[in-house]
Structure formats: C-alpha cells, structure tokens
Length: 590
Ligand SMILES: [Zn+2]
Image (cartoon, rainbow, N blue to C red; front, side, top):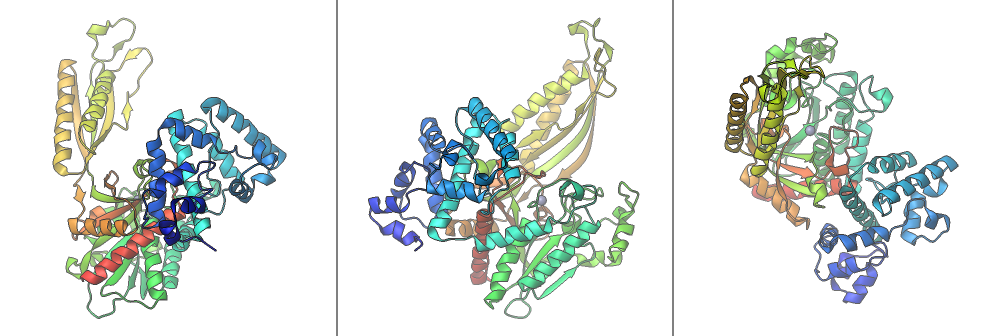
C-alpha cells in the first residue's frame, strides 16, 4: 500500500516520522523537524520544507548528512552493508555490475574526491528521469565535479541528496510524474535530430531550416496531432502552429509556445520545454474530451537563437510583423541565402506578411522556459515567476592609446589601452552589483596584434548591459559610459563607441504574472519572483499583447547553451501542473 499525504498530515508525530523513515540516509531528524510544519499541501510542499530545514541547519549537520551516505560502488556496496534504498539505487544504475576497469576508475575517483573534499561524492544515480544514469554519465559527472570549489560541492551534494529523497518519496507514495516523463520523452526523441558535423559527435545543434530542423518540425507536428490538436500546420517561416478549439465559435485564443532551434552544441530543453509543456496539457484535455471557453494555440517557433543567419527571434518576430525582407538575401557560412533555404524547405516567402497576428483575437501570451541560470537550483525551488525580461544594450568599443616599448616606457609615462579597459571592467562589475538584478559584462576584450613586449596601444571590447526596466538599464549605461570617458581622460586616451543592439525591457503583464503566481501557489510551491536575464520569444509577443513567463529549474547549477543543460521529469511535471492551473483560472475568467 502506498502512503498518502492525508496519512502523513493526520498521524501522530511518532507514527508520521516512522512513515517517512528512510528518506534522508541515516538522518531521520530532517523529516521529524519537517513534520512540525504540517499540514502539507502537496508532496512538493513537503520536499520544500525538508530542503529548507537542511539549508537552515548549518554546515556541521549538512556535512554529517553528506557523510551518512555510502561511497558510490564503494566498500559498503561490495560488502552488502548498504541500506535497502541505497542498494536499490546503486543496482538500478548498474553499479553492482561494473567491469573491472569501471570499478577501478570509480575507486580512484572516490579516493581523489575524499582526499580533496573530506566527504563522499553524492550523486542521484537514478538521474533526472528516475530511470538510472548510465555508468558513463556517472563516471563523467564524478570526474567533472572533482574540479569544483569545496563550497559549491557541498551544495551540489545536498541538491543531489534532495533529488534522491524526491525519488524515494515518489516510491513511498506510489507517485509517478507521468506527464513530466512524457514531456521528457518528447524532448529526448526530438534531440535525436541534429545538424551534420554535430550529430556524429553526439552533440545537439539544430539551426534554421537544415534537414534536422525540418525533421524536428515534422516530429513536433506528429506529436501535436497525436496529442489531439484540431489543426496543425507549418507556417511560412517554419513555425509549427497547432490549435485546440474552444467549446464555442468565435472564441478568443490563448497563445503559448517557444522555440525549437538550438545554439551549437546546446541543450535539449532550451525552448522546447515551452512547446511540450502546453502540449501535455492539451493532450490531457483531449483525452478527457474537455474544451475550454477559448482556443489554445501552441507554437513551436522555428528560430530564436540567430545561429545560421544574423536574424534572431525570426519565428516570433514574424507574428508581430517584424520580419525584415532584407534578411532573405543574407547568406549562411556556406553561401546559401535565407531565401534559397526557405524555398528549399517548401516555404512561401510571399506568405510571411500574413503571419502577423491581430491582438484583438488573443487573450495573451505565456511561455514556459528552462531558467538558464543558477538561481532556482541554488534555492531548491522548482519553479520561478518571471517579473520582466531584462532590457539590454550592447556596444562595440575601442580604447586607443600609444603602443610603446614594454621595457623602456616607465610606468608613469604609459598610455596603456588595455589597462584602461581592465579598470572599466572592474567598474562595470561594481556598478551592476549596486542595482538589484542589473548585469554587466565585457565578453570580448582583445589587444589587436598585441605582443608580449609592447604596451597595448589599442584595446577592443564589448559591453553588454541589462536590467529589468529600461530606466534602470539607461542609468547604468550612462554611468558606465561616463566612467569610460573619465578613465580615458585621466589616462590621456581616447575611445570609440558603437551601439550594436538595443532591446526594450518586457515587464510581465501584472494580471498574467498573478495568474502564474496563483497557479504555482496552488501546487504548494513557494513563490520566487525573478527577472529573466536572457531574451525570449515572449519579448517579441510583448509588443502586441500581454505576456508573462514561468521558469523551470535547471540542474547542474542551471547551465544552459551547453549539453549539460538538464532538468528533472518531476520539475517538468510541476510545470505541466502549473500550466493546467493557469488554464483552469482562465476558464473561469473568460
Ligand atoms: Zn530559449
């Protein structure tokens, strides 16, 4: 018999503690402390309370918790003295079935890890889908984490422990994230398509209108039809557009979706999670024969990342009438024009203008996206409410001084361009940190034709400055540029400045942000509001309709635009559940 939350909420304290026994390895104090905060509204709520207790416990109890765990494929496994839960997990990951070479490699890693950190390596070996990591993944992760800072590794071990507990809880309660697994599997299948040159290396790269890109469009279309959408088509720029009809004619439409193209050697969830999450919701509606008082339009945007052509947000931009016909003559690295690529893909460029949406037909736009940053992962929260997509501005700059002999030019007679930019870089860091949620980056900093023995006469660099509102961004920009001018004046240098990009901030529409907040609260998950540092399709739709986004926690410190990008099927399930709650609210409102 599986446990129920009702049992946990109503049992006496000792009984409830006994029911939760075995969650945190040899550490019953965590569940016992959590029970003081009953009643729990959901399993997600219980997990959150326990994670908070561990976070508040301080370093010594945290280290004791980590040390209560066995080594991977270690002595305890060999001598059969693991707990039942650990035996199950290590067996499921195939660790009881290592080749002699794998076993030797893991023992070396165990010894190195212990020597460096003083605690055992903890990894949730059942992985983000709960079905078990491969031994290859386990060994690679082990080797990678050896390079981490000790403080980070303590936190990463604790996060893995919480994930182990999450899976143990699912087992105890007989819960399976069925729709999260489905969303996971859709993404895994879609990731089988990758551009030539990357596919062979097992890397994921899907750029605009390549064979792999068109195969993705076909697969998403197939998934949409199977899910029960009434209409599915690929539009004139390659967007996959699916509509689930309302229970009445002439209803307005909820628009949602995200992009299916990727950066080179990217992750499987960036963009795609925002297509498949609503798709899972529509699949459930269709299975139950339910219609809502509004249409649901889910779009897989063909292009967001600007990898093959210098045109970002091409897919969502077309919906707001921002497709620039000049783009059609742009060539990719192989000299293929966008026009030729579109013709080859069977797309009719004459139809692009008609993709523009009439805002009066729409309720608004929502987008689910993997966070692509470390924040939610760090605070042990699965979902985040986006308050605004940061406004940004980029500059290409150069400081010009005087190149001179590195040996003969005294320090007080130099006009060193690179040192000036170094000084500016420190200022940018300091200035951005003064604001809440501003970020500033000098991503390129180079001395053209520099030499070891020459004082840099020129230094080229970029500035990327972002903030949740245009006013906050502009104040930072004006301070940074004033500082650049002041540094150059003091050092007798001059500089050039070219603005290469400017995007307005896209604050979430308050009513839509509140709908996400109510949806997340209804799941028993504490609210965390945050700006989006990255640009998203929602910022295009923002120009013609209200929008708000929901972020989903990423694993591996939230890394993105990287093959290590990951999230769990449990978190995907929560995203699906939140989206369903949002649909429920809209159904009562409109
Ligand atoms: Zn994205």
